[in-house]
Image 1 (tube, rainbow, N blue to C red):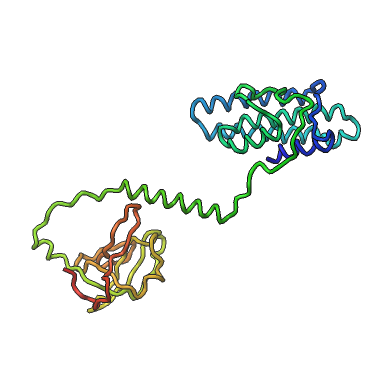
Image 2: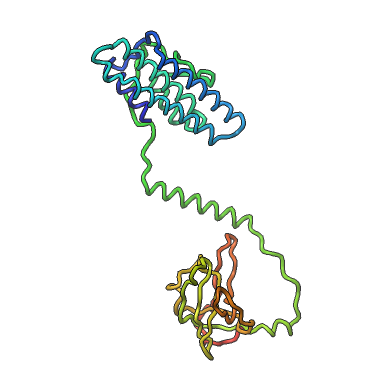
Length: 289
């Protein structure tokens, strides 16, 4: 956008928007032509092999070449002493704008169309990238205008939310529950002592991104439980809440902390964990079953 704006504004400033005829090319002009041809070949090869990120990079390279060309030739300085040279420079720059219109058509068709209208171009083909005569001298170039509409932050945020919602909906549609575990007899199930507890304290475990340390009121005493849910809950939001836990698991050390049980949680389709809790307040220590 910046290169196109500079080229069009200078053409209007010095020639009233009428594209001047180019004179003889100097080495800097010839080097630009060679660089554009090489970029065209790289762009075409990337598209042919479906490397679209690389193809877009090569299309943007054409604009970078144009900016460098104007910086090296400085037509605004030459306008004081050599208008014939300025004609060649701006003709070359506008031709390069035409190349950009073709190169960006696969990626930004609306921008490409706007640029074509600005340059008076119609029915361009891919093979014309690299040519420096696609816009006839004498063509009236339109006024410079924004090639990209400004997108407000609110619109970007809304689009990101829609994309995230679509992603979640697709994940949910594709999600399938894990297969049921092997059957256990009722006596085995009864050995599992599940209870309700109230969270008295909760804090992050040092040097462990996934772990939280809980102090739970289990109705008889206070017990410590370590749980790997730190990515899904903030400790300060959990204090005072009730949770369901397995009370009779053998204690085990986790990051140097003795954990006396296991909090019950469900795994969502997106991998997030949700703590299980009674739907109404329950007395700490109440058995589940």
